[in-house]
Amino acid sequence: MLELRPNSELCDKDLPPDSTNAYICSYECTFCSSCVEVVLKNVCPNCGGGFTPRPIRPGTAHRPGTSLKHQPPSKDRVHTQLSLKDLTVFSDSLNAIAPEDR
Image 1: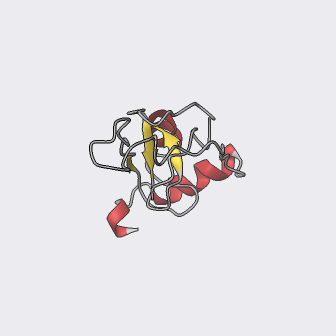
Image 2 (image 1 turned 90 degrees about the vertical axis):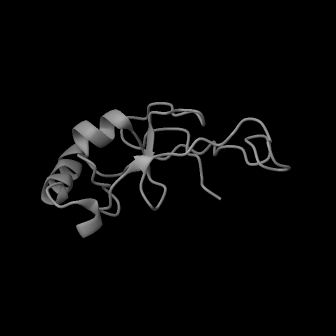
Image 3 (image 1 turned 90 degrees about the horizontal axis):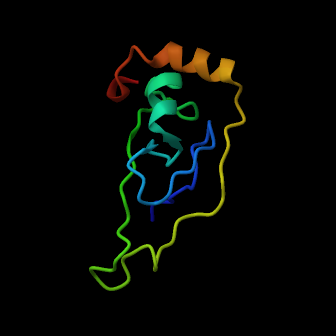
């Protein structure tokens, strides 16, 4: 089950479950579009992979047991432990390589 984290791990912006501004990597690291585009340059600072828009879990159960009511978002806020300088150096070293080639 995809963990819907409530915030951007870098800037701590709230990212509710229906946010179209949330991006994730294949490990579910979660950042807002501004952090992904401007700071991270589509390089996950944790794994080096790329980002994709986070899917939106329906608020209504269109099938039994499948909705935010049945699988609520996480309440645990996650924050990167890396400095802005470390993030920038890491993303700059990989951003010229397409995510599928990293």
